[in-house]
Length: 83
Image (cartoon, rainbow, N blue to C red; front, side, top):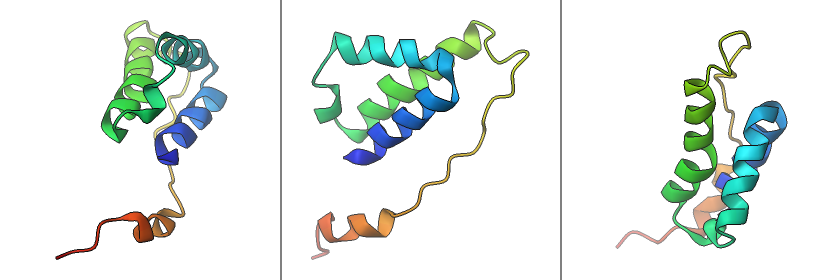
């Protein structure tokens, strides 16, 4: 499941304040990347961004509001076949 890790990487690059929070989460649980996609997204992206928002990090800085995901078609061969 590279989707969550790729988005996490780019969030850390684009929003430097998130990098430390993400690193802390990764160090706290080295197996986090083996969790469900929902848990990875929550722990590595949504929670750090929510914390930064609550701390007023984006009051004087623009918050990137667009994520473009390309290449999802390559995931189709890994999806279960319909019965």
